[in-house]
Image 1 (cartoon, rainbow, N blue to C red):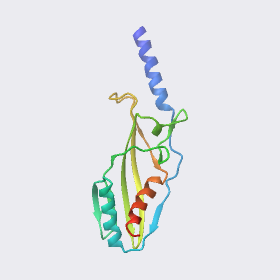
Image 2 (cartoon, helix red, strand yellow):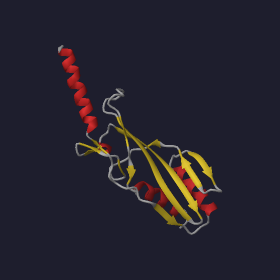
Image 3 (cartoon, one colour):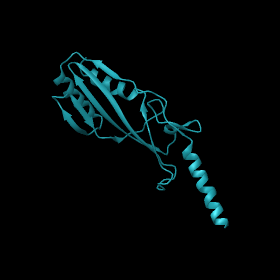
Image 4 (spheres, rainbow, N blue to C red):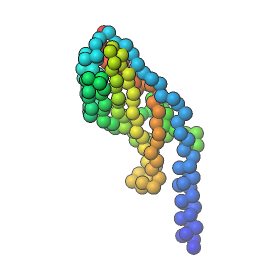
Length: 156
């Protein structure tokens, strides 16, 4: 009976922590820039920058003006994204949160639009999947601005 009571208390604590998850409140900004070049050159440079930054391009359609990358491990900070909080503490400030980052790029004419795709998991129990939480993350625009700046620097 004592074991059962102890297990109920432990389960209550674990579920209590998970129930305090607060979804992100940030709204992802739209990052678009006009570049002094044509669509073909912008796509070429964007691909070069993404590969140089360690991203694997999974889809590229020059006619549609689309580039997608697969997510790669990337340490995301609270300044770069909002992945929610628990008891007022940001999940991204906790070392038990792991994140992956990928990019989606659209080019139309001489305008480039960049969207960061962030996947994060909070793993407080290590390999104990019961406590793990998949987080909903919203970029604050810092990641998009950084990659946009690197692309733009190739046209200066």
